[in-house]
Image (cartoon, rainbow, N blue to C red; front, side, top):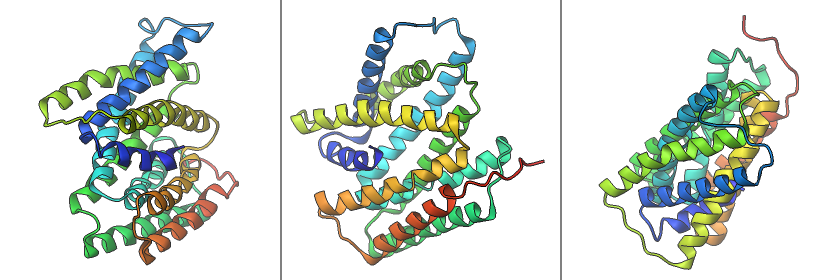
Length: 280
């Protein structure tokens, strides 16, 4: 789902500026989640739940208001393959944050896998700068976006299981929406309305924005943050492949090497099932 989302976002930014696209995307996500809430047979009052409000605000900041504009801007300034691989430094940040704040400890194999994944995206970044494929600002934007996304994952992982998943997803979009609208209006945002843009917004907003986060958050509740996030190393490989096939992006040696490195890192990190003791 998220692998294809990189391609779909890239297509969408052909017809809308990044900030305008993000605003439309979050509108689509919020509308979808409102419908989901109305269809649920058991609905708890969300305005009186202080825990829900707190986590909704925090996730709105890191998962939506900060992460999505950085992600979309980075994709618009880069290729699908490079942006996917750079953004997915997120598992390394998650592992480090999980170690320091959630008392999680990764095994030696898992740590080696995360390092290998970082080396893979680093080689890709340096090479892309050398051949002019990617602007330096795009690399910084994507890596900062990955950090923001990782913080959001850690916040969700620390959230009590009593907080409803669908309600917190709804609030993270609703609370971020006014900020995104103000930013979109205050910047030089442009939109060229056409079927391709609408399909892109709906697919990414309802699909990746709602379904993707729902799947990720469900997995985070069931597993260790570092291991779960490492599974999404498969996403940049899919994104890079789709960029080559549908956007005629060049299949370079470094792109192949980067994809292989993160693939091996996936096996090393997510394939290790031994549970080491928590950090003392």
